[in-house]
Length: 492
Ligand code: GDP
Image (tube, rainbow, N blue to C red; front, side):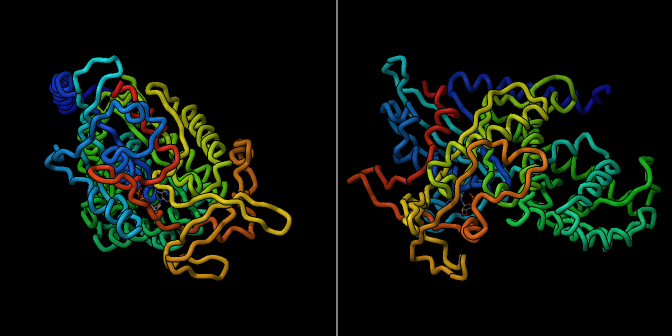
């Protein structure tokens, strides 16, 4: 395909911006770190914990620059991009530390700028500053990239085909019933479009729920609309269309196709151009435990989503897309979150399972380019460990305070009392969970199943340091390893 004039102009603009940013980067080294993951994967908690640990010098032994004392201080700076909301760090940290409540989750893109003053490891006495721009955005938005190369008819056919497979089919019943009443060639009708979009969105939302924990559910803004909720660019849905040929003008299909194209133009392209293409590093948070708990279909779906996410990061000049949005990202970290729901004996296993999933995703996405690593973390550790004796057995357990209103085993918790839970072990060999068509194999046995979804309150933290800026430290699991991979070389 010949690049259009608009595409060439776009490329020139991006190239000019890259040159300017490169020049600025020589004098003021800046790193743009993208933090993404599907809703509920732990983005808000991760960023809040990361910033808090850097501002207050948390316990991060593997994060060499901090551990060796080379980081003099880190401070928040004014948010640089006028059109992007600031990440609400102060409120989030107050919720976590003050009220022991989890902060409000990511609903749209936001940014936070941190300046880190450090001494080079090479012994120069001069203090340097690394500016770290953290960009928080919903992973759902990344899964829209393939739409740019898809026509409305192709997308419709694929979405309908996928919705006829288990377990999606059961959840799509209401939408399918409405779909069957629609005639693609009938005159366009706003009410029908609204109803179709609403039922289609409800189906996507049901797929995403804990029980099914599906991951691959484009278009991303249907679940994470940001500030676009209710706009026409989001008021479309698949239709059974007979052919690829252009639908008659004025028809329902023509209206849907027009909105699908608008979605690409006003939503998908600007996001990749304005935000994604400017990232230097990326962490992708994955609630792998939720998928493992939901069973094989959810795990398979998660692997497809990981491959789709990786495809966004593929460098190369082959397609028009990669010319326009070629990311400059050189390191990607996949992090399985909420590892504090497992006993530490299973942390390495969780890491191995995610590593196997990403290996497959790398193969499927034919990914080569940035270096990829995998880690199992808890950005905020809400539990501690104990061994609990049950009959003649001693079981490795975790202890935490369930969030008020959570219930398990017929009991509803009040948010103040602690319980000990045996979380079950992950299998030693990831293959047993990832084999094609493996039998449903919950993480814990059925008698424990109720406890697998329990949400614990954030931990009670003690004020440690005596005075000054040494605030309370938030406990975590392997957050330091994540930071070392993402930032270590930039602070060398
Ligand atoms: P987001 O949608 O990606 O921004 O997800 P959040 O960061 O808001 O996290 C969603 C929920 O997951 C939180 O409300 C917590 O209940 C839980 N969560 C996230 N991170 C952790 C963690 O490190 N440990 C525990 N125990 N729960 C977590």
